[in-house]
Image (cartoon, rainbow, N blue to C red; front, side, top):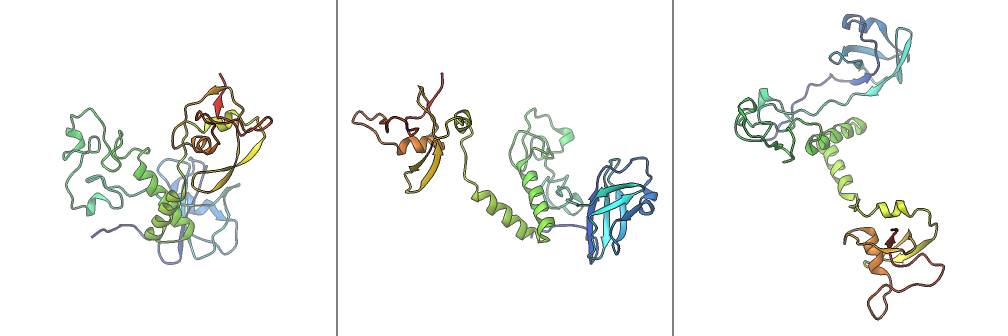
Length: 254
């Protein structure tokens, strides 16, 4: 059974954060010096995040001010998004090591041993199988979990609902061939637009370049799909649609 552990701020409480607070202010003085800019807002707790200039605030009630005053300075209040929970034992996301009943996994090579005893020189993430440490900020699984946490804070929803929304948004994004899309930017000087009939029956509007030298396109790229939709002559070459038209064979400059 999967269990997600978290510490609740309490009923009717909201956790937020303010940035760029002077580090010379002692933690004991934070509740005294921090004053909400809105009447009726009640600061239950104020805690500095480590030795940083960020202070986490817990507001009691539904009245959340847009700003707070720290001495003579005003600071904007932002929703606090916690870091993803990650177990230091099995390295899975969503729980901590104190409640973990799984075997130890190496954070460097994802082997079944402690990271201190690891002799493998190649890094392998235990979560996304990438070539990095399991706790690296570049991990795709940690990035996805961070997006889910942000969605939870934004929508005031559960982890399950936020996770489903993030995954739906990711699936709705169409893949883009980054190796070929530079052609659109390179030939943005040609302001002639044409409606092109694609193979799947849809019509899209594109700004196409003038011919110069043959371009080899990725089969999945948008330009290759347009090139496939253009009329061809008897030899199989792309036909010239006529003078003055930008709907011609797709080429690059040399």
